Length: 244
Image (cartoon, rainbow, N blue to C red; front, top):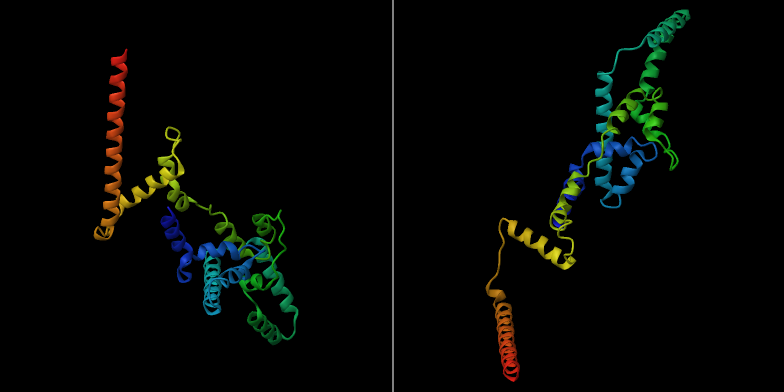
């Protein structure tokens, strides 16, 4: 079971280059942790270069996901169209239209994406009563695209099937009808099952000959002892019958 658990762990977390981005998105989209927590945790396991490369990949993947959501987002609402029309009216009031064009160009260059603005903000306090989905609902007006991403990503239920499957062997051996087995015997049964199901087991017979001979000698001595004990009991029984 330990080997199976290690295999499952390596599948999801063992290789930093093959980490599922969706697992890291759930951390980044938590306002209490963001990308800083990913960097903090992985810095304890890997070098700074690998951690930097991972954070850059997460940042880039989140930007790519944001662009995808923006491309499939719903058309602007009536209020948005009304605000745009009002801005056009205000802009028409300016005499110098060249300045308006210059202002638009400057603001478009300095404008940051929602992902950048979100990651640059400070992490929120560690409140035990913090409700992440409610917080994204409140900030949906500030982060229209990220709030949609958080709604979809954070709604994915966490599955423990991979971990539970590794322990299902013990449940099949130790059930309500066979609940008095000792821990040592359960361990022997599970290990024996693992050895029998192994594809190829290399057994060195020659190296174990001494142990086999010692075991056989011990078994023969035990059989001789039991035989002698049986003969003594039979003799004692016959004497008792004769005396009666």
